[in-house]
Image 1: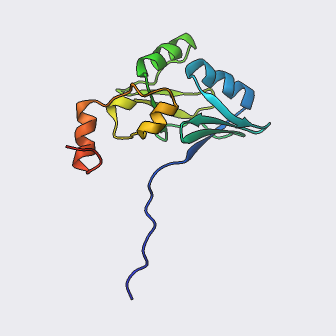
Image 2: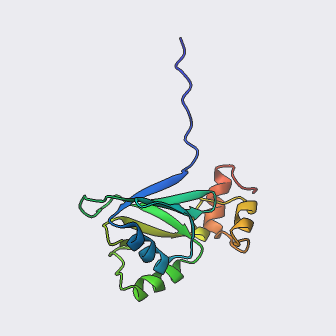
Length: 150
């Protein structure tokens, strides 16, 4: 009997971060990013990322992340660097723009222009980001996978 067909992972719907306090987390992330709040309760908040979202959940108790992190794609990496400085948050050492939030969640900031990750044109339009484009190296990676015209 042939093996059963496996489901194929095709993307992320959301990432959930545990934080100490929802109001404090919204204030912290609001100093760094322009975002739309999808919804909230006493123990959680949901920040829209176009067709995806970031969930903030009250209850972080573990130590700060070391290597574990997630990459947050942004339209302007330098604007995040400036916002971190204005908020008094030091980026972590290394070649990437990583930082720890006040609860120890490690976040890597990634520029949209430099990664294969792509939003559909209608999503970019809906987010007011139709002007974004990709660097040549990111386009070449997409072409190699058959995900962009050559």
